Image (cartoon, rainbow, N blue to C red; front, side, top):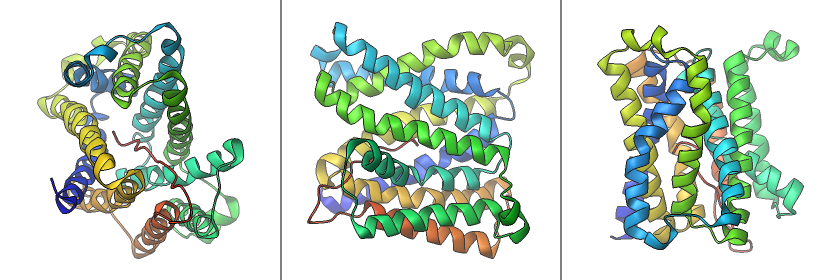
Amino acid sequence: MSDKQVRLLMVLTSILWSGAFITGKFSIQEFPPFALTFFRFLFALPFIFTILYLKEPKNLFPHGKQWPPLLFLGFIGTFCYHALFFTSLNYTTAINSSLIGAINPMVTALLAAAFFSEHLTPLRIVGIFLSFGGVFLFITNGDMLLISQFQMNHGDFLMLIGVFCFSLYSLLSRRYMKHYRLTPFMVIAYTFLTCVVISIPFVIWENPSSYLSTTTARGWLSILYMSVFASVLGYLFQAIAIQRIGASGTAVFINLVPIFTIIQSVTILGETITLIKLICAAIVIIGVYLATRPESSNNPIKVQSQFS
């Protein structure tokens, strides 16, 4: 596979990830947040464990010291992020949630600089400020009254917390993989499994009998899409791209997710987009690019995608 084909594959991956915001909006109308989190990763488990078995049979079962980091990563990065993501969709638009999700690289870079002494170049700092400023203007719609009172939509706030959870997961997973000799396939398989197990009591609390009888084929197919296409295939395509064009080159394609989400949200969900929101989205995307672009003088910050 040539580098050009890999880049086209990452464009497809960005479309798959953006589709998760659309199908998430569909499915949240029929399922509560914890049930969506549970079913999304339950359906993904057979696929991801089959891949782990075929590619790394010796790593199918973690050793004793590998369990605590896997359990924590599954809790903070998979369970917490997705429970917050699905809950946020009850209160905000798919466009808002995707754009807020796109600042994950900046939050990761800030946490890395603050707690792990990773270097930030002036260009990355400019990118971070542009991205946060663009998101702030986007969620306030440039309304001076909202800006002066700093009123934030409840769903936007939950999505921001989710982004911080996933950024912490991104930082810790890199260190845990090195320290505990975990492979990426082990991490993804067992964080999915951890998420499913942790979700069970919350799913029971949501009382499945109150909604399962009214669910439709569209709701189940939406979950299946998120499981197979956004989670399993999206992750595999990302892993292929990282091997061929590097983590930094792959991370740039995160910029395309909010663009594709805006297109799909307007055409499929009928959400509205104003000129000020388009300008703010452009500011965010430019900021993400500046903060994640490869630099010859530095080791690039390795960014994982929360869309998988």
